[in-house]
Length: 366
Image 1: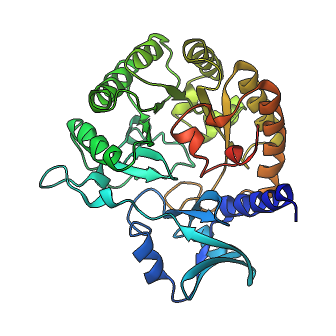
Image 2: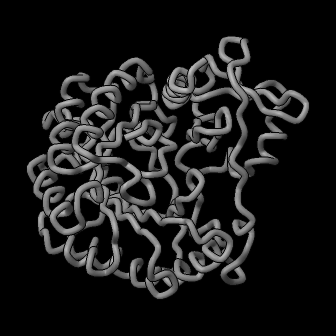
């Protein structure tokens, strides 16, 4: 089989894993948890990062109800993990091991993994302590799995610099992804991320840092964050259709698409093409509308990240059907062609967008 055909088969497998998740084979749960201790922890979703066929990383849901109906099963055959599809082995796989620094401590009550989590192979993400005003106001995005009935643990912003120092001491190639949920105002967004950037830059002046936020109405927010050390920006539109955005994002949907377009364009002006990205959710709105939104982004120099809708147990859409992998692959075929035409590559920025575990864009050559 030619290399291009092999990677094409793997992309199909990855697309199906992203949409369907996977089941753990009988008797494999203990071994899986030994490899990936946080697999079934109480957090937004129960998932793990797998490497399939030794070359492609994918974030796979295991504990969600929809994953229990997946055609994929992960089994342990003596000392090797394999993927089975409908009972037939299709490729070797492995859990990405959790790093040793997870167990190191910042102080007597906080270990590093409470502040940072490793996503994929080289992306550090601030852990599950984000704040979302729309959750607090009962206007959360319907697809979101942000905890609604639990009080989020607080951590001191000063913990961030110490956690980053510990992680980078073991792998200096890490980049950092900061996200926020949604803050109450542009001013609060600037204050929160400004403080986080200050802590990071104090110990890691050269590391790539992406900021994921709602598009600000005040473009001065973008200036402040870039001047404070942000190297890329992620502002997620999710859907092209404005009415659909208002239905599925009753709080966030009040920020218009035009506001996003203006913020993307300004971010590109400040940082350059390929340094701004935005997530689009495939599988809820029509394919052609998702593609239209993606092409608008590409024309502006923005990287679209196409993530399939998944009905997480903790979301209001838990009973909806999963996205068809064909829908995801159809959209990706158009997106990757236009990215190549525009001279754009998701790996032009660090952190979340270049990680590639939750989408297919980084699995193509540009």
